[in-house]
Image (cartoon, rainbow, N blue to C red; front, side, top):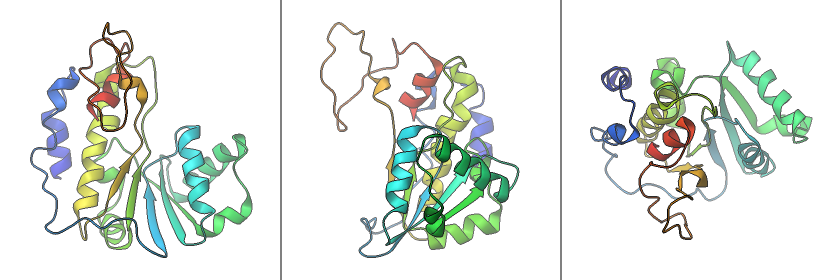
Length: 212
């Protein structure tokens, strides 16, 4: 409900700078955030929209200590599994033995609570050890206003999930495309660097990734 209210309040935002306060009312739970667990780990991946996320998924599935739940946009869980395995197969990444540690559930980054029913959200909050935020809506023709719900508001829902129940670390798969390579003072950029502002990014997709 809180995510829906925040999404409605910021629904008219068309400039990524206007969304930088979306997380101001979220607070992490007290105490340290656990590091990557020793031994077995239950991972949640928020989507596998492109090949890089596919490689991350299969590397996790090939680890006998990992159990992976993936959120896939679909009408139901069965359709979600079919869609994800078909995409992995098209990339040459799917083998039936990888299904043993894989659970695929229907959900959406552009919906409150990631499109999950309250009971499922609560159960996953108790079960998951680590969140890999690899999901995104990738579309190079849509503007920021159309992409912000999934790509910007979506990360708010992910962080709210990570803070619920017991604290869970979040690993975020972003894009080097958020760096303005046209800037006169363009320079090497690493994970800890400041990408600067969104001017010059050129697409609504990259602007949404900058805000996230």
